Image (cartoon, rainbow, N blue to C red; front, side, top):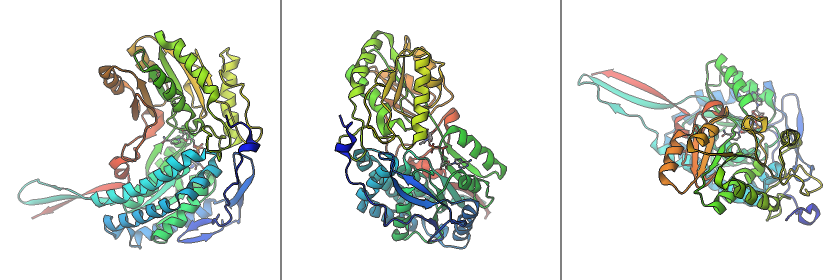
Length: 492
Ligand code: NAD
């Protein structure tokens, strides 16, 4: 177990050479008012940089640049294949610099370096490869409507896209917006999460090096003011947002004022159903993995565990035995599975939910383990025997906490699984093929896993039902989001 920070702390990567300003119209520049703010390493609390705090004026400048690049520049007029070639060049640079990007992401977010290396950096590059290749398939269709008429469709970009991204998967979730938006011919103003902007700064440099023209991709670091200014701006045609349901609702409302297209990818409280016929050892491992990945700061976390009654005690005992041994520690130690949370406010939120459960008489299994003395750590925790209506069962905790409860029948499991406001993901563990498909169809969620959890691919779309938002990312659906369809009807 990697709990001794002193022994596991390795040398941190340096951010000295990294531009930490706004990237507007192909130039690095300070915020209009000169404001900056510090970024810290969640593993140590040390300052790792000071980035520009973009505000309203900066958002307006970036939108003006993106607008010019769209209206007067050549980006939307390139063939999709030509744009795709530039995205593929960007992907190649991201592959070339994958180790550097992985280290930067771990430093900024506190992600275990093992996962940044095998998940974050390669997936971000792969997303650019996927949409770089898919661009070639952007085409309209001729529709036979009669001998005296020619009717066809064109797929056209919306114009300026504001991409607003969250703190938990900065590089991947930026790529899932920026790559398809650019492939479709839009120009972009990107506002990364206030606390984790580092990888976006480096990727902006790589996009420029790959040949993305000035003004086509712009980066405004900063907080909610910069994000809200982008959403309000009439010159922005579309907002692609990933974040919390509360902020997403505000973004949809603000975006509605100018009737811009808004896509919102929001929070989750996903149910993982374990049926009595499941492979128990596998189901226990899957249940743990579903909630410890990314320290539980995972919109698709399997945070509600529904266990069929005959195996309930066995599954709870199995998780209780294994959870305290999942290595928690320094993100740069190679054996770490659970790193620090991205910041103190996230630790406080997790603790407040677990404290509420304890106050209601729920046992918090695993909570008393020893944690590294510095950094933003929480213990992975199992809350067994919870009431389905409790706050920690209904609301997103966004940390490594499993709320477990029993069920008797398949119908009850489906009803329980569908009983929160969210609908992002769901999963079921069973050996019964018919039940697997029947249950998967009945679950109100954008992605359903059977006998696994969290398996993703850039070709597989995901997105929300209910209060988890609307729109789809990844797959061809993720490109469609950024394209208008225009019909042209010609009298012959
Ligand atoms: P958040 O909602 O606090 O912030 C998201 C982004 O919105 C940040 O860039 C933030 O600066 C910006 N923002 C804040 N207020 C704004 C406003 N009024 N107008 C415009 N922009 C504003 O989310 P977070 O804490 O960074 O991320 C965690 C949340 O994101 C969780 O709820 C998680 O479930 C969700 N999430 C969802 C998905 C998904 O695909 N559905 C993926 C990852 C994370």
